[in-house]
Length: 125
Image 1 (tube, rainbow, N blue to C red):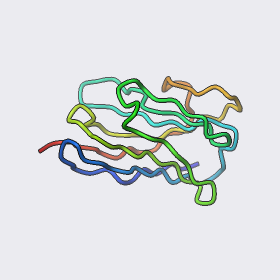
Image 2: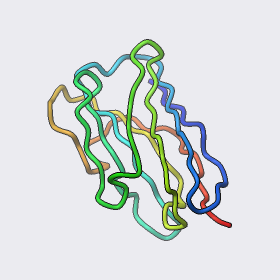
Image 3: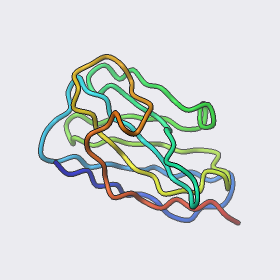
Image 4: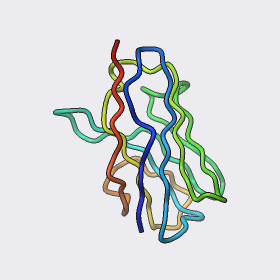
């Protein structure tokens, strides 16, 4: 199983980015996919999660209303649309996949089984 993130970059405050996570090796129907981020000197933190089959989603309070998670079943790709970006959103963003077949939307890193290599998002003027 491989998860490969892309779409990161440098944007000014108020800008937008769309991250992608290409998934290969298996599908995660009925499973939870997640986005996490880690800033320098800080622990990895939950950003968003989605059930691949139902589309039910969940967000951290810090990104609610600004970020939107989605998936493309035909391309086996997970997305994170990020709007109104602020300097505090600067971090390496990771996508993650859980193997457990459950309706729960996991919010802690140790509940996920597969991780991508991360993509850097920098918000600065």
